[in-house]
Image (cartoon, rainbow, N blue to C red; front, side):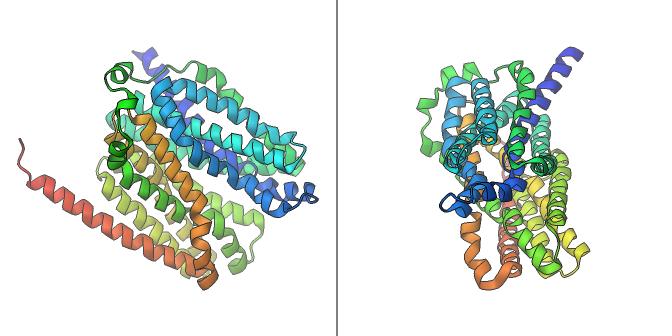
Length: 398
């Protein structure tokens, strides 16, 4: 029994560490963007193309995640996970040798496909191998590991970039340290469920009826949260004249808050239903953004950033857990692949949706508007959750 428990803990830790690789993708090279732009300055449109080095993987995650989900259900979770690692290491580290900016962008596109495979397969395997409160706890820890990884990898990428911008791409090779543990992972796909309910027999329309609202919440939630990495540095610099190092430290503090709340997700979710968690998440983000919008002192601004970060720590595991609850084993890969697409589509669309508001009202006004939208959504979710709980209490047992 103890050996089995130790093995399950080792497997869970491996999957949690795999999940941090998705955050590592962008965090590692962010400090190197200036060096990349300077090196390829002679390339036409170098400024725009350099920004795509950071954002292009998100677009290909959006495109590849549904395919990765279907592959998980048809071929098995573990082959998709290992394929993701191979693409991640090869394409991620290719930047260290890329002779031109277009080739570097191709490698970043392939990296996005690898991340889609890793993220979808890792979450699906966590859901497959656990049940009940343990599943809730591990999905919360997954969010915590991802938030903590964001802090670690930003600093690691910064240190590597101090040596040379190409060195930062070598950090992706560290993912190979997980290979022995990943090879020992058991396949978690439920073969019995697959033989009775083949994936081809499950219409996409039926799947979307179950998870469509969750996908919409994931898209909107990530689009609103991603205002932090996209617009927060400019607001901090203009309002407090902070250096880039201090800006990074402040944003890392928000990630730490997300890590702490993610670690508490299992306990909180045991008391609050999924829709109530949506209200809690929206309320925390709204409160944090409202404080950020009006704050002109550093301590108060940091308080707002921490409150908003706590909201993120609940958002991702709650939507993952909700998706797992409403999808059966035969659909799980597809359902979570679609959720991954929704998350990263929101990330990709965030600046496109926010820029007109920021141009009209400024960065402070943008956060005030986002707070108003989030507060309205949180109130609506709270009312729906209360109404649904009342209906369930009034329904007589069969």
